[in-house]
Length: 166
Picture (cartoon, rainbow, N blue to C red):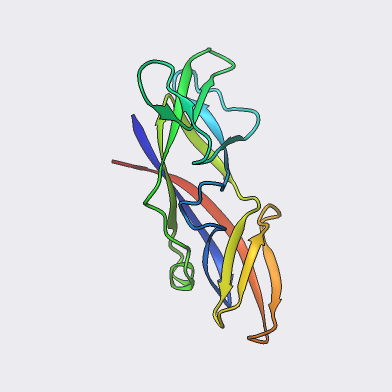
């Protein structure tokens, strides 16, 4: 069992508190990333989607998980379970310092998460308090104008990494 903490960073211009629409533990937010098999090293061709709302029974034993998937190359069955409670919004201060902010913890058995894909369903607020909802980060950046603060706002240089945690 290995736990991977999804960490994100971005350059935030006149913005703060970047996070999924319903907060870091939003049950409806979908996480997309590729998986690498722990046995044969095969990388999934397509992104895999997991969310807190979607659970499936564990193949052997009691309980549930968020993903059970077989490797297309070696046939090994592996699981990914999401562990809420570790995420924090990416703030202006964290962005300016060049640091990463934790988003979600994944308990991966047999797989390693690789290449997180930013998509839709994000929210962020301007330094003046204007809220921007359903932000689409799939193009890699976001630009808008804050009428209240009379200034441009922008998200750019999106990065994500998976850190191994105990």
